[in-house]
Image (cartoon, rainbow, N blue to C red):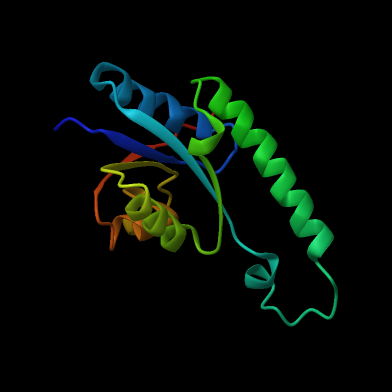
Length: 145
């Protein structure tokens, strides 16, 4: 494993996300790497097909506010400044790829639940991030309590 300058940690903001951040920190600290965090929010119109005749704006805004608070709390544990805390909107794999290129990241760290078939190795999001990545990807299996 080479020296990584900038590591992007993709988190889902569950308690399991702390495991991913801890593992990324274990890689970053000895190398003096810069750590950034990213959380992807899929717009509700994606989840519900966009055909619902109701305004989901307030719900989407509440999701965003909660995500910002949780991401900031997680970032505080490692002194990651606000400018390296990213909330992105859209499909996680697409947005993580875009951000990793834009931020000139050389490693993306992501967690995987790994439950079925090929997903025993990589979860669906982790698998999608792996494919088409322009940098190294490190997927850590998440341990359930």
